[in-house]
Image 1: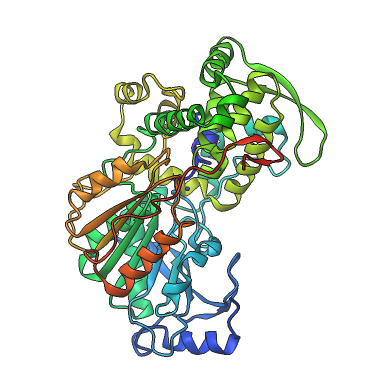
Image 2: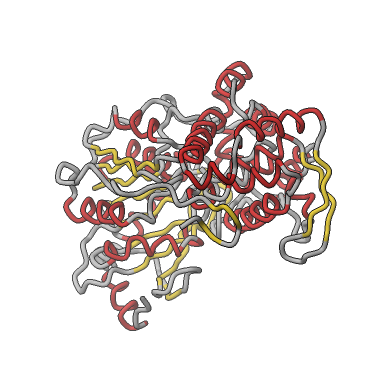
Amino acid sequence: MAGAHTHIRSILRRLAWVLGLVALSACSRGGSSPQARTLKLEPCQLEGLAPQAQCGALEVFENRETKTGRKLSLRVAVVPALAAQPQPDPLVFLAGGPGQAATRLGAVLRAVEHIRRQRDIVLVDMRGTGDSSPLDCEFLPKDAGLADYFSEDDDLAPRIRACRERWDADVRQYTTPIAMADLDEVRAALGYEKLNLWGGSYGTRAALVYMRQYPERVRTAILDGVAPMSLYLPLYMPRDAQRALDLLLAHCEKDAACEKNFPRLRTRTEALLEKLSQEPARVRVAHPRTGVPEDIVLTRQAFVGALFGLLYSAEDSSMVPLMLDRVTQGDWAPFVALNVGRGERMEKVMSRGLQMAVVCAEDVPFLDTAAVEREAKGTWFGASMGLEMMKACEGWPKATVPAGFRDAVVSDVPTLLLSGELDPVTPPAWAEEAKRTLKNSLHVQVPGVGHNTLGVDCVRKLMVDLVADGRVDTLKPSCGAGLARPPFFTSFAGPVP
């Protein structure tokens, strides 16, 4: 899932050049029958991706059931296979969030360069994201000051209503099952018989839903950061984030340099949290870009929410002990700098309206106050994350999901499940739960990484082998045995050697 903070704005933040002639030629083959392809594609360039892609738009009904009324234009991109005779089934990337646009995450595709040698890579902006009739809602002003990054969101509900009134959209039609029906229509328009699915975070939920709706259309599936149907957003986030934070602090205590430089870090941080519970911190900090000092107020909820976001990446979390050490001594500049940069990146890639549409339809209706408070009990992060999301969904038009939507997905599709040991939102236990009903699956837990395993060489090798052979029984169950958490920073000049 994309980063999620304890107040709603933060919750919703919480997911080789090829000759043009070669690209055009490859796309005319496309790995599918030219006679079967009905979607017209033209050369395009995707952000963060060097090879030229082929892009088009597929028109679908917003209301797929009635097939009347408003139509949506779905953005589709195909990065053609390099082989003269490519394999007929492409790799389809399903982005996270919910709310990320697949075609704006071109840099991610560098991880599957070897798969692209034999197969097209297909990206579709899910309805409501990117260039597919987006449900955009600005939560962070373009001229945002530091206070905007850490403010409480008492005015968020009317802001969401104002966005909803501005959209020419029936937000009840923006759910995962409907989006996966869109994807199957794209598949048919591109002339593919079967797909290899690759989902990350929320994209794993999307992949599971597609596998249930169209089992005969899936050849293989790769699920990285597994969110099974029993994972409700954001119910388990405080518990799972606390697990990741406890691991981080335990690792620091066992690391000689970290423990020496940051003694009694857990105790000092708990004292800070208690102090923030009594009274917010009022601090003056230089803006990390402009250098101009600004005054901000930091509540406990704003602090732990921002801390949550830093746990997603093992690289970011390697700076957390140093950051905690500084804030417990009254220096908030590193904390602010880390979170401003992360917040700006998230704003660029997320559709907040689509995120609300999915969570308000598929998650919040299954929550209650008692469950939210139970799952958050004893954590630093508390119940605010779930309680405020429930509040934000009040008044959201009620959508329906199919009967049994939250039942576990049963499938015999060859499926590779990938988990980062330090993942704060989809830790390995969730993949184990999904594995119980994915009858032909392998779960690989990768040590030393967080909410994304793509940076690990053996993970990419496993992905290549699965898609090439179409089976999991030949895959090596271990991966990254020598990996460890990145070295802790003891100063912002660089990591400990």
